[in-house]
Length: 110
Image (cartoon, rainbow, N blue to C red; front, top):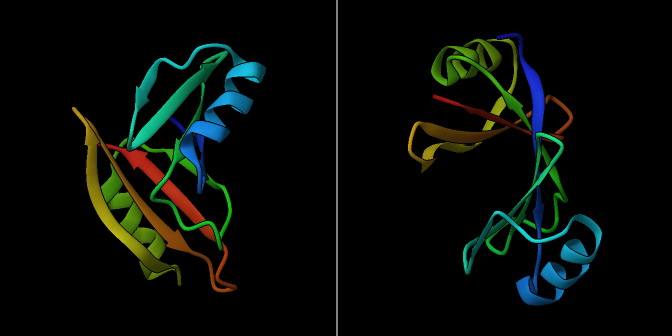
């Protein structure tokens, strides 16, 4: 698989208020938990994260085959780690890096 942006994670301060807006736009979420609300929009994931860093805004998540190898290559190329890899679902891990200007981006893979 080639790397492709497969999701956007949106940090929210009031999950219930945000959920009303995004449900009106995208329909019922496929996952509705106090820690995460997710919408599938034609195969693209829109995620609401009440623990996210609102100062950095939404983060594009790039789907990769090998999260560890991709992360290592990006760190060697000058990216900086913002959050270490963590398991968020069976067979799914994520991490957040920043580019040299401090812009955040995420990786999602195994």
